[in-house]
Image (cartoon, rainbow, N blue to C red; front, side):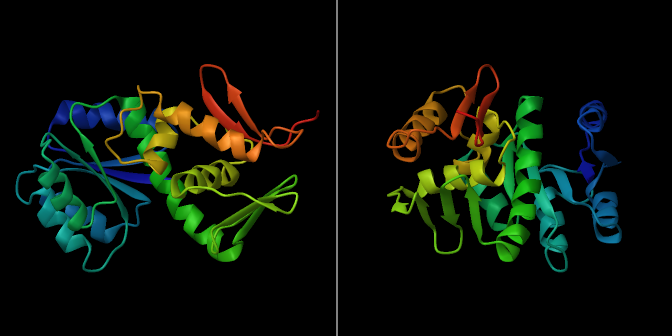
Length: 228
């Protein structure tokens, strides 16, 4: 996966490049909006990490120009914390929004979540029904069932189950789950994710003799069919 980081603070930009490269990404850098827009238009990136305040051309201006011809995923970074600033960024075409200062682990989780969302859209079109053991989910009709019994899920429960199913066998951290299912400024230090998983289990696992949603201590959750 190839990323473009557009950040005018040189030390932060280098820190991001090094960390993202260690996470397995190929990373290009730009330190102002004009150079960043040129790279974004000329090259095909899987995702752009974009600072909101840039010399030459600010983040919102860059986004507006980019969205005229490209739908590249954009994660916007900014020191502005007001809700109206976040709304302005999203309305300008950002796919996610992260406020400085931030934990690098959360940045990586959000990048991965956005990239997975892109892949998921294509997978949904090709394979709208997902199945693990006796659990079946129709992504287009937004219906879920197990052993032929309909599961009555809330919107968030369906989103959480779909995420776990699409990531079958892959451990998802609480931060990564929060980035995909909840608001982008969700505080992953709360127990909201754990509570939601508990409620989902009560509907997906509890009525049946074979659990599919498993806790991986210290890491997160995984959905997979294990031997009894």
